[in-house]
Structures are given as C-alpha cells and as structure tokens.
Length: 548
Image (tube, rainbow, N blue to C red):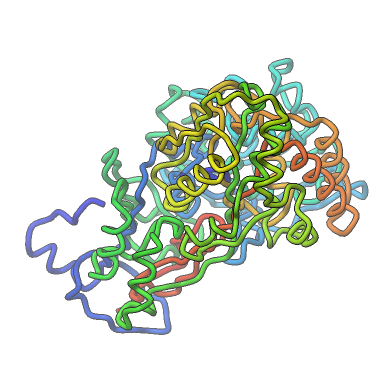
C-alpha cells in the first residue's frame, strides 16, 4: 500500500479514577499485572505523527487505511498475524471450477453492520463494483486497477458498461466471481481493504464525502467520534459476529503528535504505542534500547516497506533516460542506511525480500550500481545544462526526512543542481499524481501481501502510473504483459520468473529508483496483551487485550 499514510480521557474525576486500572493511556500509576488469558474491557490509545482524512474502504490510502484495517471492516478473507489470507465473511472454502476462473463463495449468516443492518451478498457485490466505479467520488478508488480481473470489469471501469457480469449474487448468501483469466492470488486480492463490504442501502444514498466521515462496516469496532486533526475514537461494535471479540471496549487514535512525544508518552504509560513502527525515530529507538526499563517495549517488525524515488518521465530534463540513469548510479545506499541509524537494508529492486519474486542476484549485480564517476559522465553526456531539479519528500516520515539530505549530496556531487522540499504526505500524493506534478518524489510501498504482484500492480504497472497514480508516470506495456501472463499461472517458479522479468524492465527505465528497505521497530507498552505486529496494517485490535 503506497502510503503502501487522542483525546485525553475526559470525564468527571470519579469516572477517570475508575478507568485508571483498565486503560492504557491513563497514566503510569496503573498496575502492571500480567495474565496469560485474555481479559475483557478497557481502552488502548495509540498515536500517529500524521493525520487521518478518510475512512471509506474504497478510498483510504494512508494512516487512515492502517487504522481502518484493524477496526471497521471485513472482507471475504482477512489477513492473519503472518499476513496470510484466512476465511472471514466467507463461511467455507470457495468452490472453484476446473479452469480456475469461477469462484463461488457461501457467506456467513447472521453478520450485521454496525448500524444493525444485515450483510448480504448484494452488499458485497455493490462494494466491489463501487471500487471499480469510474465516477466514484471524491476520486476513483486506488484499488480499481487491481480489481479489473472480473469478466466485464474493464468495460465497467472505463464507463462503457453499467454492469459487471463477472460479479454475481444469485442469492443473499452466495457470491460468484467469473474471472477473465485464472488469478493465483485471488484470496489476497479479496482480503484487500478496497474489497471490504459496505452497506449498499446506506452508501448508495449518501453524498461523496459522507461515508468517508461516517463509515459503517461489519468489523470489531465502529467509529464513535472524530475530532479532525486531533483524535479518532472507536468503540466495540455490538453486532460483531465473532463471539467474545473484541476484548477491548475502545480504541483511541491520536494524530499529529511529534514522534519524540509519542515515544515519551509510551514510556510514561500514557500511550500503548506508535500507530506505525516507521514513525519511531532512530534517536528515540536508541534511547529505549539503552534503558533497561524500556528494552522490553521494543518489537522488531517484518521488513515490509520499500522506499524508492519516482522520477517523472514527463517533466524535463528527466524525460532523458541517460539523466535518469545518472540519478540511479549516484546514490550511495550504504550511506543512506547509516543516515537511517542502521534501520534499513540497501535496496537494488522494489520487490520486498519476503516476496517470492525477490531476485537475490540483483543485490550483487544491480541494474545501476553505485558509481559516482560514471554517474557524473552520464550527466555530461545527457546534455544537462544545470537546470534546477526539485526532489520532494514526505516531511512527516522519519525515514524520508533522514534520506533527503543524503540524496541531495549524492546528486550534487555528480554535477546536478538539486533542491529538496519537504511536503506533507497527503499533499505530496496529490501533487505527484499530476503528469507534470513533480520532478523527483520519494515513494514507498507497505506490503498489502507478500507477493511481487502486489507492488507491481499497485505501483509499477501502466495502470498505477496514470493521472492520480505514481509520480513516475512511466508505462512499459511489455512489462505489463509479463505480469498479466504471470497471473494466469498458479503460484510457483514459472509465475515468479515472469514477475521478475517484468520488474527488470521497470528498473532499466530508471523511472522508479530503489533506495532502501526499511527495518522498523515498534515501541509498545507491555500492558497490551496478545500483541503482535501485523505485517501490513500493524495493529489487529480485535485480538489484543489489557493485562490486569
């Protein structure tokens, strides 16, 4: 997921005192009793350094996406603690045709939305078609391209049809998908957030922005209040279909909190943890590691984030591939890792190390190895004449803040006139989405699932690089063809080989230049029982409890 990025307890004094023993975020005086069994009740409070803008399942794309996954919604599948899709709203394993193109699911009965309405197959059909809808407001869903796998979906997404024949709801508890070709990772796609179920009866009648501000799902929690720019509060969904879940009464999410303040509040017992591990600054991490009181607060997370540069091929002088190659060869990734305090691994590709299609040979023989001498020669031979090039970076993400000065030095030393500019996350996404919106911009991918098709379809494909998409706006139809051929194959070596070839073609264009894989560490209070760091969206709140 290309990111892929509270309130103090308020009640009368006696109520606050009663909450102290059951709430992470109520202060250091709370007892730290432990238990091996889940306990019910209490509140977990976490914080992000950035903001939330939209909780619409088809639209959320940043930190709101992260929170939404662990609270509001369900899909046919749900990713488990290891990132593997497990049956969720589906009552049983699907019936799959011999040619692997027709998948029939029977749904759980008795599932209700948080407003009490029953969930049916018609809601699920509507939800997926909504993601494909070319007139969806305020913008087309970022999942539209990924979902163009059903018969009739491409014509529907192009506005040439009003129906998708490959999405069928023959009865209230059956949904059937007819695919244009076999899709090996269909369970992963159906577990994606943009395929979560929303209530057709409500959403179809609301204005463009209403649902994003007042979401309704079938998940373990529901939105209670949202003080924009300050905090979001979720409370237990009384209609949740899993008996006994969630254990918590409430989840509070603070936003726009400085990372060092978050770390201090976690140490003081005022917060349960960071909303996302990559916002824990290197200095705060090192301080916690060196303090025996907080060493057990630190949890290493899976390497699920790739950072790279998007180089817009539509903006001069970067329309010149030779100059883009110079950029790629100017970058000292080993030094970038040092700038990140060792919290990273040099990257020579964009597929993640846990993706089956990750190519180990590129680590030793990258497409464009670090060679500042050759990079300087390429700058000269490209015809570059000192034009100013601006690198825009996310100024609310610690890794990007640390990387930007190092990249500036790397580019300047090979003769490029470069300036850096910090931009807020959501603002940069909007700016870079225009075909000529930026020259160079930082980008990253937080895994939706560990498979190269995830980042290829979401960030490297032609569809992902159109208007409103990735800032490189580079399209390689031959690479897309390799990816499409791969998806017609079952999981295995042949499919992996095609996806590797597709990535090679993208890397050769030097329009998306790998930087590092971020190694993150979460800081989480030991009061949180059952905690694990979900590799894609971090906090899977329904499975946690407060230790008494």
